[in-house]
Image 1 (cartoon, rainbow, N blue to C red):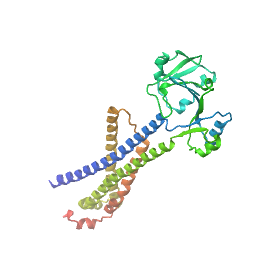
Image 2: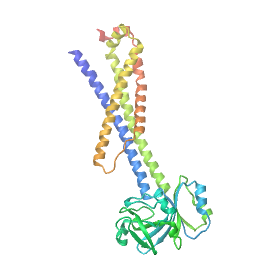
Image 3: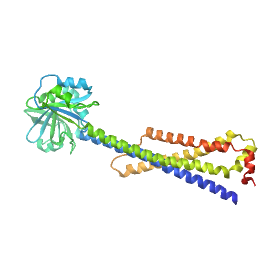
Image 4: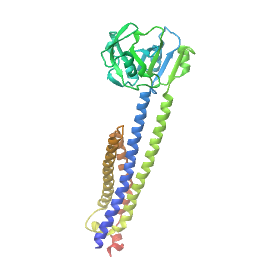
Length: 357
């Protein structure tokens, strides 16, 4: 009867320890997955709003190569020149096909101006969704006339397609060569280097340009979200540390109750190394079981979120595997002390222990 009671007690203690490990690991993984998802969506929102884009608009005409100087000095790889002209009911944007690499355009049908069309001066045009009725054009490959030129519609934008710079629903896009007189001109670009207005004053002349740069706002918010994620992960790792301390505490308290077992094994020829490995393996197995159950639970939770949420949560295998390996390493290191203490017990100590009586 006492043997059944002892086995049940040992298992119950392992079950509770495994449950504590599972909860703490689930917290770490969920914090990492959900916070990464939020930050990724913020990046996407910035991109859709155009907050990652800088814009320079000339207020007076210039005939020099200021754009080439700007691109070269700031190592800008993604950019697009533009001309704008405001008509009564819509805005014409003359641009290059590379504008689609700068802005995020969602299409109801068709696509943006193509590079080959730009090379051969194809009369291509993309229209905003609210202009379908204005031009009486509801599908691609139809023709509309602007400024006496017949254009073929190659793309129709989705409804509510706008951002910080333009209401694209009321814009038409044609190649820049068709619109170069009496229009605003400038450049949209993405740059890793932050431009300062002093440099632009020297290059373009004071009060000769309008510079819009939202990168500071974007960087500040992303840094804040990264800080919140790191703080939450640290707090989650505190719970991991507590659960590992529970494993170590159980191992230390279990040494006295398992003194008889250790003495018998040593009397039958087991070495201190064998006892040491036994305790290390037992505690490592508990952590591995906790990791397996936690990972399975997290995948189920993410699956449930994806079933009912509008946005899909992706699981980054690499970063989560890194956290799991870190937890396993911490747990293995912390288990060295109780395993060492158990391995140092001698047969004489086990005989003196009441467990043998």
